[in-house]
Image (tube, rainbow, N blue to C red; front, side, top):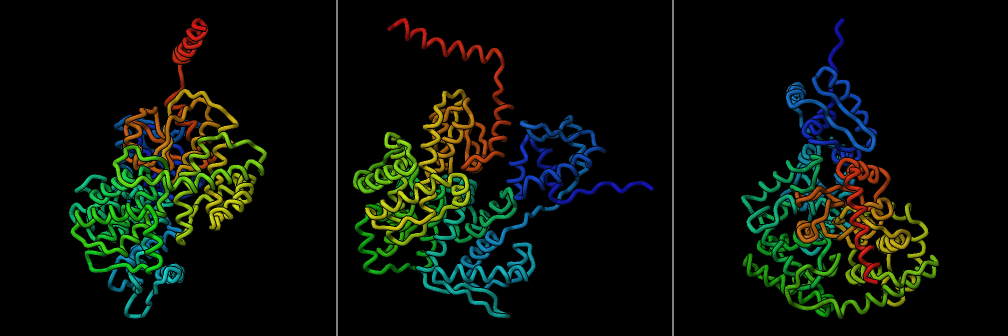
Length: 565
């Protein structure tokens, strides 16, 4: 009896299609991230693919420290692709939190009721799963002052004040920003006026975002639908002007969230929906330097979109600017209110008290670490403002940080108690985690001084602490790398153009920037170290001639220096 041919599951088919389209080796960690499953699941699929390919002219190759690839001629690859045929759409399983965020985004965008049938169809789950998810959705909305109406033969609808609706949207955007999805979405729809959500209809942009999603599961279409067709390219130009006026570059997460918040504000104002800010809170916001920036932004909103921006709306924009994380000085200063001298006085004092406390706890001298102090000052200024106005502090890396650096986290936590007496605010564990990254990066820099060979730029969608810890981890693990700069993800193209590195290590996928980009997690776990070693082996394994040439070049300065002395 003839044995039935092996059938691949949908994910394995997509995995094989991805390998057939690749021009070089890829590593399992990348594939696992792309398909939203564990490395073990990818290995099981590869075993099936290897057997399936036995009846084709190509074969699957697996080599430690190099990766996975398909070996065969172009004709052989074409034959394998033809045998594979049409591949059904692959939809990975969403986590409860991912489903909750997508349901919230869907409900917030709709004025009319949404049925559970529609949600089940969109999420590709049963109505029973949707009903279970709605309990979490309802609790999430209630914490932000909104109510979820749930009635049979009616559907689901969110009701509440405009201010509560805006806060819910802001918190949702920040959650998508923390995961890096918001930054990827913004970069994918274009950054020039006339591109993105404003070209054609919002539905066109939403469809583009859905089809461009690597995982096939994204809140992008629903986030874009909140904009109502506002041109994101124009809004980006306005936000970059604010960055220049502030003399600071926002993190990619904060930058992308601010772009969406401004676009949504324009859309809501055009529809006659206004926020309300209590008089006492508005008076307190007027005293903040960010209020001048918010007024500048409000003026540009009126010029570009013809909407009237009331003072309460300027106050709301001030809150968003207060909560925006800064990763460094602006690359181009455009004039306007100079925030740095006045704002840095308090954050500098708190940073020095913090460093002194950590030094005492760890017994390691850190006061001479100017990079540490500069990074802390940049980080603490928006953090203190955020805490004073009751804005949440989030840290998706907190569990990893406490597991990887428990002693440093404990030392930072104790040092924060002294800072709280001076700043007059309580620093939550999430904030202690951010500060721990800054200190851990400084400790790693002290541990090992690196003379680099390959010039690398580190890019991140998060704050300067994440960039610093990744740069320090790279320096510790790879003596052949020289980290020549750091960048936000959205400012990476300009940094690459100026610095001309050999390649980029980024915490999130980015569009083409002219050099290769290796994506890793912020704390560079072992599997990412292995993947980066594989990349270096493939691209930069030096020949004997190269090694001799580099050694000769290194001797020249020493020789000329000794003769001149």
